Image (cartoon, rainbow, N blue to C red; front, top):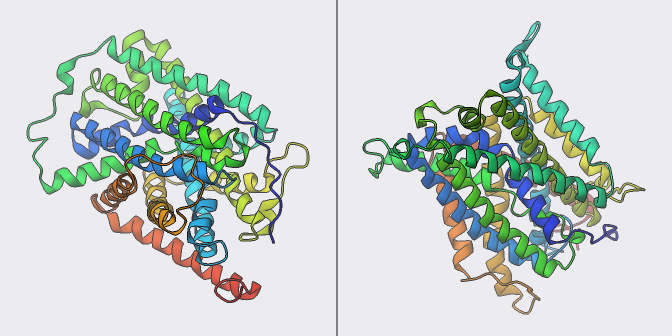
Length: 453
């Protein structure tokens, strides 16, 4: 049984773009820069950032069309349900989406909290130590988990208050990435950007390295769709959602490329560490400035997690309203009108995920989401064009059907062209199979598709 959506349309274009960009520019680009360079072995890793931006733009056009046509809470949940049939296979596909989100969203949130803790070590090195008598438990993991829970508490307020907090956090994000770019270009050495000999030889190793690098940059670009999860809270969604998605991709792509060029022009590729961004500012302006930059990068991590928790908590809520997920997730805070149970559950699982390694977290969440969400959406937007040509589409993607086909090709490339690709793919399949089993058991008991009407 469906329940009426109680959320209100209060978020305009400026707030939507800021929330998207906070989601995108978290701590990710600051701590993954050396991982991208290491994957390709030199400054030619900039190609990974360009390819990641092209995939994000192609995928963003799909999100823009679907989000404008179906501006509801839950984003992908609503899209998949309508594409594959609200009373048919769409129930299974949308349930699987929410099920995988229970794994991938907390992993994404945890990655920001782990990055926050890694930069805290730059300011206070003893944090990297293990707790006394517990060699497997590091203080950084405890700090990451505690940060996650603190942000959940910060989100226990009305959407108007959340919007104001979000704009303040976004201003800090822009200041941070701007400072890194300025610091790098004021101490820039173009010769450091020269790739090593043989860097452009198209060997199997080149393609494996590019695949691994692009997987990481794809993770760093993700977030341009956050506005779609807030669909029922967006003013003039037919215009606001597409603009917020596409503006976010373009602006962030330019900022990422400038930041990477500025850092690689100051620190040699083989000397990069996870705190390279703070090091650039230290070299440019001194140790005090380097410390302040670490603080601001931690600020961006908090901003990203804030936006992730805000957006993702709406998806289980939307499914619960539909009667296609556990009823408790449909509960709304009596005073502030936000899905409180969904937010608490998302935050609790994310806090648990903070105890895994960052590289494992990133690889797992990217593969799970590509296999069980993005591929279904790329195919689905083309299916919807055929099944429902009369559907109102306030925004129609440019150059259709090239964007979804390009996105499918890009996602396919990063799934197979990297070392140990089968490990995460197997985990994604396991998540999908267990979710399907749970759905069929629940559907049989409730006499739902395919066991009933």
